[in-house]
Length: 206
Image 1 (tube, rainbow, N blue to C red):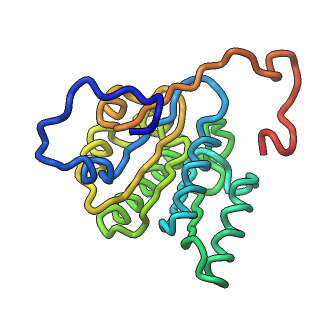
Image 2 (cartoon, helix red, strand yellow):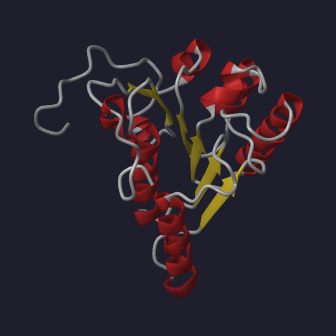
């Protein structure tokens, strides 16, 4: 146990050794109103890439036209792997063409169908153990809006085979997902420059 880290109050009666318990797959949820949920998830994905874990990123509410810095960086890391063998393969998927929480394009039925198909693809990949590390970015929103069934998601994630790590981001994570997760972080806002009328800027928001 690292210095300064308190010992757990009790050891689970799960029949596992300390090493086995340490290597269990993690389901993480980053939620809350504060900035940094996706940023923290991509930081975890960067560590995973460095360990040679195949990375799959699935963005649920950003337009397919939205260019984020992390996407460019991870695509470059995927090319590094293809060229040198360093790190791991990276796949980046935007779930739908322009559907988002702004709901500017398409009907709500279109958005819901796209979200449901995106989740079905992730479920297929989990069953096939396609990736070692998954980022489901802004996935709490289709759960909140009822586009994807929360109970089904919890069941698939809880029963996923192998050693696949999953991190989910977005506000208002449902209680069932929080209860199922191993790691839950709530981002709280203390101050934000946008409160003072300052818009997002390059190198900070994207």
